[in-house]
Image 1 (cartoon, rainbow, N blue to C red):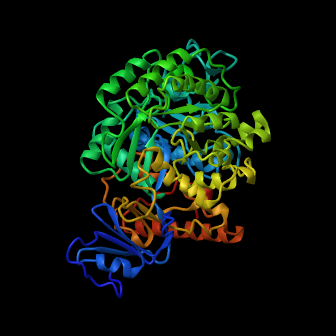
Image 2 (image 1 turned 120 degrees about the vertical axis):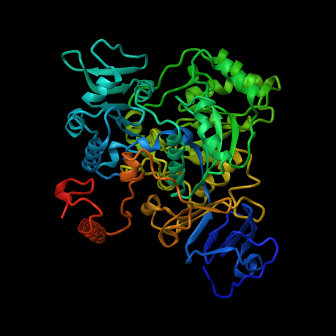
Image 3 (image 1 turned 180 degrees about the vertical axis):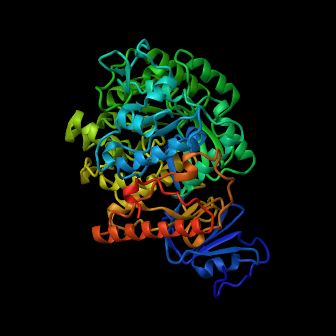
Length: 625
């Protein structure tokens, strides 16, 4: 846009993009605040004020006015199942942010009506019963009423899944189906499955059932992944570390992001991990992968970061907080083989570990190898989750050169954790301040998409306030962090966990041009409103990958969502709700205005034959005008 006083001057090496008139938090201690930034060939060339960027503006430079809004470095989710999430995104009905079960069921009922025969309606992660006004799960009867003939699968955290009658049939559950190890098929008085599946404590029963649903093929996988990445860009995410996970096979399930990277169509930087999928075959898998690739193979868009988050299945401690902590059998011998193999071949790793009992056993293996001079051997390694890690274990982790990655799983499971372990234990779950006080690198993440939402601002809200999505305070002030620290966990720390702290996470000349202009000033909005922040402009490598509000249309065009009946095509992803900081009266008035405007728009379209007269939103008729 034309900007007074910034006429083109550069003739050589002009910037591709300049963003000015912003309140920039650079995270750079040399220059912590700025007003303008210039980028060329994906790299920042100038940070300062208008005078600093003016020499970089040429006739083809795109200049964007931030209109005085807050700009921060692009966010980096240090633990996100982005590859798996992308392959399934357009197939899933998202309840992320939905405030009532009534609305969720109305969405489900409408989606079931448009879902073709043979396909499922699946609600997979990003929500908790505690976020609903009703504070409960849907019942099997409600799912049967909403979708009598279409299979419906609703996953709730690591705890349970609710299936309707059609889904039980599609999944092949009968009275003769045995309970799998670590799981339970709830049965009625007649011995028939009721539609409830319980993780007891293993979530494999939930995920293996979900794996029976149809998957995307061909170009639809690319389209789904591109739309998921755009959805992440919507919240200012520019990087993510993919933590692999169950039912994510290498190299098959990674081929989509590889093809998109080759075509220059990624809008999010991804550093990925490799996770052995078959119990008893872990060492063979790791050996084969070591022969195929090395950590840091790739480029700034797509790179291998190491192994994990499981190395051996026997060492995994499942985290259904409705169930007692699992008692793991002896696993150290095989686990030591895996760690030794990785260290000898220059591979770092990350480890899923919920409980201190598991962490202590893992550390004993590491200390044994360290005594032989084999650990950490210059390799990056870290623990994920660590809700109950002890002070002693943190000291041992620091001594071994480890790092941490924490996620806001207790945003969604906090009430269950308090119920089982009490408020005292919950106050330090996980002990974030203790980690930081020891000088550990602590990355922030979400663990989306099958439990937590992928919206990083919900996680930042949890880090700062200690509150769950049900508004229960579980972490007192002594275990919370300030806004600058929380942001650094989602920017600088994430870069450090991939060995990229010298090129991203800070807005500084020579660093990658990754940034976001926010809808609200993160540093000054009331705490309840942090979770409602979105990006208005997201830039990755100098490319505008997401644009909204005044900037709508500046981003790259995506192909339409496919298949056309996709829930995302009709509802989108995260369901934004009014800012919590609004007064009740003002909030109700804004909602009333939004509903009225929506109905007027629908009537206008219907009069011009642009929409059927019977068209309605997903709300129940009682909400319509």
